[in-house]
Image (tube, rainbow, N blue to C red; front, side, top):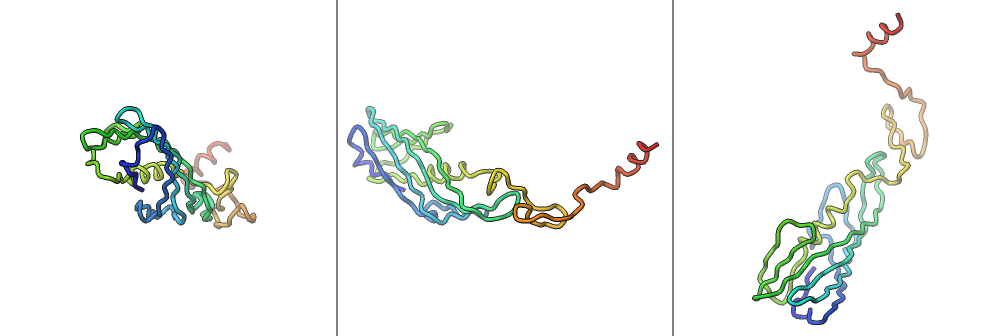
Length: 169
């Protein structure tokens, strides 16, 4: 995703950017990015700086952490950063970030690294196909969302069997 610095002259600039997952290097073994990333960005000018605020959205296929079913997830997140344009350099400072990035100012500014970081941070740590997903049976592996099983769920650890005998006395 590239921002044309030379076109950011107005007080408020509305940009609609789109990128493929391959451009952002989003090949991930836990997530299958199969639709383009859409970024709606508003850049507001204040002196030599532009406050850029926007929303990212895409669809990603994830595997449920409980039942292992692949499901489609609507990933939506925000990305805010500041462009400081002075002395033929652009300084990027991401909100919440500890450091600023200075790059030479040409006509285009590549923001792929910021977009990639925002998307990877927005992925759920433990994706679930639904909040009430029952998962798999720990004994036989049956998907408990679609069927039930007759397995004896309570399994005891043989190391604690002597304590059970002690309680009976």
